[in-house]
Image (cartoon, rainbow, N blue to C red; front, side):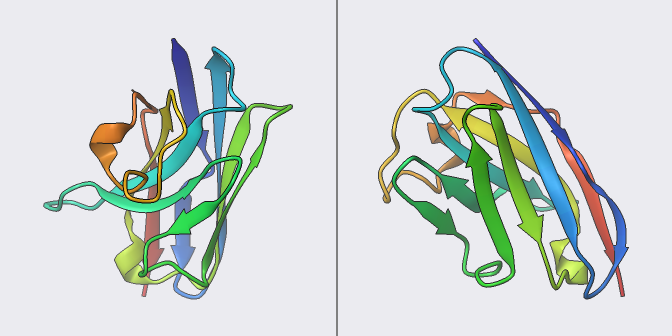
Length: 125
């Protein structure tokens, strides 16, 4: 079993930055595929970014603005969000998969086995 706890959300003006953190506990962490997803009101949950020990992946909407990273020793995953836009407003969720996901799998929410409770990010215009 894996427990995920997100933190770092908040209210920020457009153009600002936030850093989200996800603390993982439980089974071996270093081989997992870790991801961030988000869900805005009235919309479906969407992929934001993921990281494995091989690669990082980003949604086109955040590429060049967001950076995902991980610290296996601390069992932490981070999402640095720069140049934030009002359309980035959503609840952000950390997710973990029990296996190394391929490039064709990494963006699918159904591929992830564990989820955090979410942290709200609000970007004002």
